[in-house]
Image (tube, rainbow, N blue to C red; front, side, top):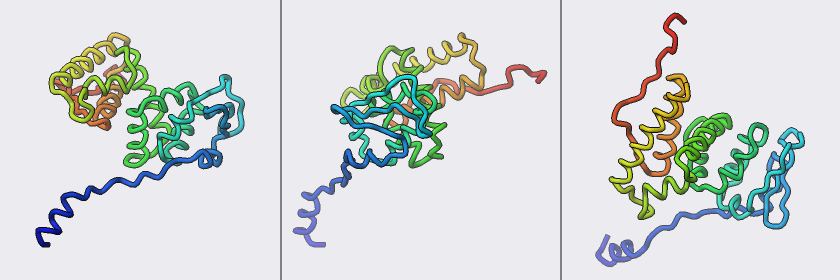
Length: 207
């Protein structure tokens, strides 16, 4: 490769080709949906059961997920169990990243996504901010975590561990919750490590 080619290569930057998700794509989802006045509306489960509460999600939030399979995965995880979490997921890009990670690189089980998001929603309520705000706080520049803020979030996680124990959660339950929260941070580019590892143990030895 000559110098001219090197210069040309240095000036050229490849860009990821994102296929846009279209409204027409959403009409063929397995979960029955309606598109109305800029919202994705869900009033029935995949099996046709009427939901107790109408779920409305801004259409732009759904289309921002970019992948039909990812949208289907999210709807499948919550429509029949806890539909109220659907808008919560779509309004937080940090949770979209988590869902994409579970779908692409883990089991892809809807039950896993439900478990993770349910845990993160509890952590989010405890800390008093949305998942996106939590990640934005630890990455104020947008890309690189701030070391001092990472330590703050380590402290948050330590305090949350104590909170879960005070709530009477079993050691196995505490361990599972902490692992979920740590995975949430990691998928969003932040490594939060506790000062000491958390280990699950048998609650009652006589069992």
